[in-house]
Amino acid sequence: MTSPADSSEALADYRPALRPGVLISGALLHGPATVHLIKDTDSGRSFKVGAKEHFLIVRMDGTRSPTEIGEEYARKYGRRLADAHWQQILRMLGTRRLLAGSPVPETPSGTTPEAASTPMSPAVRAEPARGVLRGSIRLVADANATAGRLHRAVGFLMSPGWFVPLLVMVVAMETIVAFRVGELLLAVREVFTNPVLLTAAATLLWLSTALHELAHGVVARHYGGTVTEIGLRWRLPVVIMYCTVDNYPYLPTRWQRIATALAGALMNLVFLLPFCALWLFVPVDDATHNALSALLLLGSVQAFAMLVPVPPLDGYKIVSQAFGATELAASSGQYLRLVARRDPAAAGYPRRARIAYTAYGLGSLLILGALAAAAVASAHHLLTA
Image: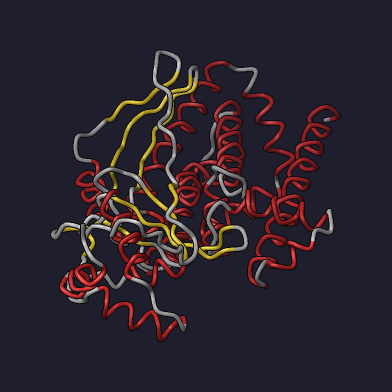
């Protein structure tokens, strides 16, 4: 049996280090707590840890012993960790294969370590069901290399000299669409009565969706992200392309994460620019003009629909990153229910969390209400025109 003295000596000699494939996120709101995400890129598993555990884990770089890290912890939090607690943390990291090199020292028998804050808990998405009616297939063997080639080909569009003019043209296009929405709605109605034009418009919108997904990958690659899969996913009769950025929540800055999430919708709008030019400046027959009109309106709706801040849409990811939160919708709902019941527990949320959850909850209701009103107004226009 290992004695406490032997355990202390082992901890003093041990230099824990995280494996190179382990990623750690910045601080994120989760309910009333602040957590950090830790991901093992080899297994794909991720975990949530509290601020105190994060303080310890990020210092495990192979150069410092638990004793040295513990001294920093004591200066920060005003208490020193017992050896048993260190054994618990190291064993927890070791069993999850997050530590490299040296084996984890054994816990002395008969001890019950005290928890520091939030325990390490899984934050893993379930694998989607696969079968004839729903499933997915990879299109490329090395998705990250493919994203790299695409970035080398079109990455120049992210430079200010290209991006700013494109953004100006997109804003101008959407202003025109807004002012002529009644005309475009009538064109959509006409296209829906013409199977050939409807098929053409649907095909172009599907292509826009594919470019949307690839744009996420290219922008993430620009910021050092890793694209793990590019493929097709089907929920029959719907078949869509997908692009998975493995380390999106772990990109270095909040702006880089927001830009990656925003890239898809912006790509949808940039895709419409040449069709808008044809619609505005090239004389075409009525059927083609209707098809272009429908494509502009439906494509714009497609882009902005992705920015609605509800999971799992891109808008939700953007808002979550803006507020610095994980599981924002669930946390907001939980907090607002406490407020509605006048539960004293609501007062225990930090000020930043109260502002974020209230703003998200009320803002989402307003946006969804505005969308419902727009849908009713559009239907009324079509029925009375």
